[in-house]
Length: 302
Image 1 (cartoon, rainbow, N blue to C red):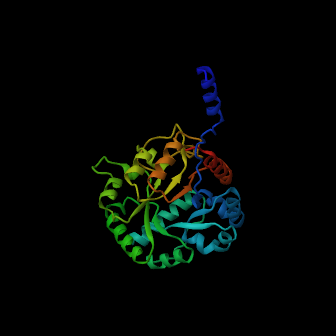
Image 2 (tube, rainbow, N blue to C red):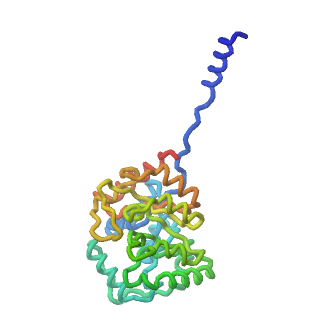
Image 3 (cartoon, rainbow, N blue to C red):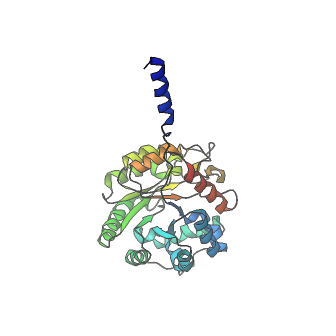
């Protein structure tokens, strides 16, 4: 066989091989219900159905949503996987917690909690979570007054819930990365928290706080309960506080500056449990923004 003939046969054989296809993100897609809070206030039944129609299968909830919307959640076949607690369930400071909730409600034009709002115990919240098959309870934010003693109280909650067959997780914002007075809160959490504590890494707030989310995922490998998935506008400020963040800073997944191929690979390597869309502010109908994020996640190549 001539060299030219052999070369031609090898070329034809190589072109007949199937092209390698990049893997597509294929994890279940969930959402933190804060994203659709205004829609839920108007029409909860249609909102849960709308989320399911978009391909959302998992939700992160608060107790009030389980109490008020259980039939709609079940009808839409959405699975609650995580539940945020009121801070005071962990810290014990109910007056501060209710004041914070009222301030947030006024800022977001939502109903304020009444003076006689329930003050549940951790055991009661654990029982509610188990009724819905929820795996973990978590904290979404700590006020400045709560932060100095929070880690010890978080550790106590981890131990209590572990005995009840439940996990506990901590969700970051930006203040946790302020190291101006020494070690940052997030570094302290890593060093001092109970080894069974897991985190929910909010990649937006980590980026705003000057961190590389993929590096944090690697550091917390094996302890990443979930990822809060949203994007960052190029003009978003870098700061270690949540105040004065312009609404335009929050972007749909794939519409900002984050490298999702790198981030999702890092999340997979870290053993991330759930991928939950959360967009604090949307330019219009939140379900339209959710659809944009879902569509991106369903086609992103890893």
